[in-house]
Image (cartoon, helix red, strand yellow):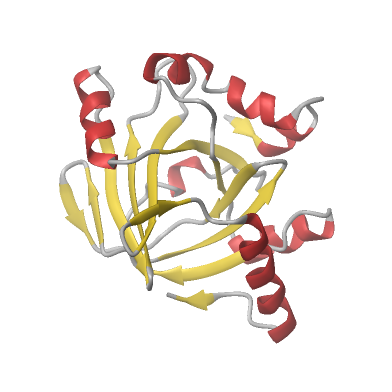
Length: 203
């Protein structure tokens, strides 16, 4: 397992994150890791601890994807996630969801924050997923989230044999136009959540 606190010890956090996927990025011509997928037992508790250390604040949301297709089969799931940025890398906190053990299997028995996946922003998630499948790295999960006016398509690939990490292709869109969630926006919404005392928005 890879742990978040080990990455924080690196002299250059962003470089340490990108080093985890160096060969993958070279093979697919990707410039950098956009997202660090972090599995935790409880998103709100993890966000609170990280915020005490100067991270975030995190934007936290609950809900269900429009669809979640795992190993080719449709599943009905619901879960919670938290988003913030650290040194140019989006941090995504994820806790176990109902309806799938996709995140559960990455939980650390001692409660440490586990690096489960690395996410890359792309245009055309299915085209990139097809490319990976043909190269011997099939799709584990294909899903979509909607929170008006935004739509997020994502595809998790099978874990890499060399290090067990999962790679993810992500595309965020507003009214059909691709974008990247602005750090200031996530921080502002996170502050509003903390101010209202309601740490999770239902989407």
